Length: 275
Image 1 (spheres, rainbow, N blue to C red):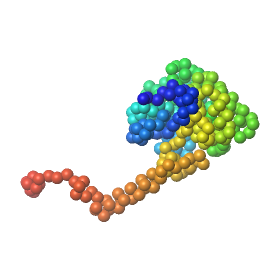
Image 2: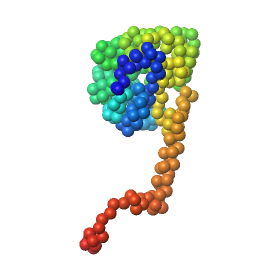
Image 3: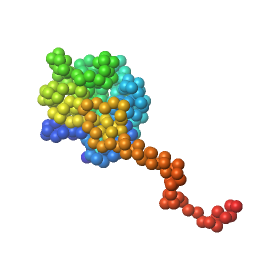
Image 4: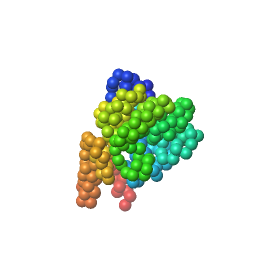
């Protein structure tokens, strides 16, 4: 059955864990969907893992629409959430609603995700009022990486922890159906999870959250530029891929590929008439 925002709500109520993975293309989304993941996030992390940027700031609306549409064609059951890229919602409530609408209409998403707490609640409320589900994102918000001064764990002081709890309650009140908690101490994430009625989706926030999300290239060992502490590699697909590429290069070079079983045949008498 198709996962929806109601699936998330019911999971929280029943104490069932939610699963989310990033994807950026049709074939990967199809595999994840068939595996049974609850949600696929078309993250602006595509800037890092797909486009080779050092951060997510250069990702455009066109990038998100392009990749979102591809993922949505492969995901029949997973809830497709598309990230709102940097400066697509911070500028005004109007811009936020228009751009969220584009991600739904052109990107074919089921929901959008944006970063921030109280400061973006007017945008969350307006987007939700327009009939578009919103997932919030607190803690380490990559679009604010310059303000944070790097990839640092968030909420470690009393003031910062209180603000995180307040922001979580604020985004819930604004209408968000879920909130991602990134790089937050486990005990704080546990507390936030208890304090809000919407599901918390952790990434580097411990196992007390209502669900988890990972970048699939990290999970499969396909991205080696930077590996956060919170990543668990479930397979070393990167090495398998490199070995396959190397074997292909070698066999083409020595002539062993393509072999007879890869060839198409033609009658000899047809060939003879061509001389």
